[in-house]
Image 1: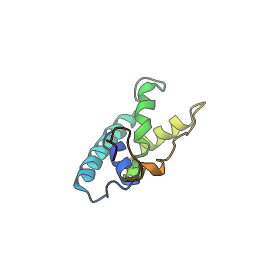
Image 2 (image 1 turned 90 degrees about the vertical axis):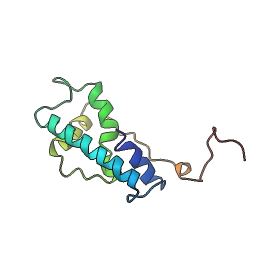
Image 3 (image 1 turned 180 degrees about the vertical axis):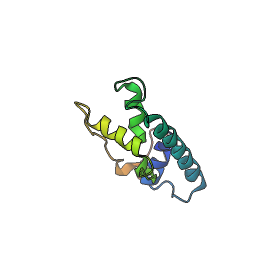
Image 4 (image 1 turned 45 degrees about the vertical axis):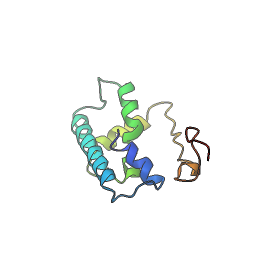
Length: 116
C-alpha cells in the first residue's frame, strides 16, 4: 500500500507535509486503492473466498491506517465493515507500535550512514 504506508510514515515523522506534491500523488494512489477495495468488499466479506485469508491480513496491515495518512474512511462503508471483521477475529491483537522519536529527521543515525 505505497499510497498509504509511505505518506503515513513521512507525515507522522515530519519528513513531509500534506501539501507536498509527492505526498498528494501518493495519497491519490491510496484513495484509488481504497476505491478498489470498497467496490470489491461491497459484495463479499473477505478479499478471497468465504473466510479470512493471508490476503486480508496483508492488506489490512497498511490499509486500516489510511486515516493516519490523512485519508478519510467515511466514503468507504464496506471497507470499514471489513476492518471491523478483521479486528473481531479470534486472537486479534492490535500491537501496532508508533514510530519512535528517533524516526524523526535528524533524531538518529542509520547504521548505513557513513560516520561523521
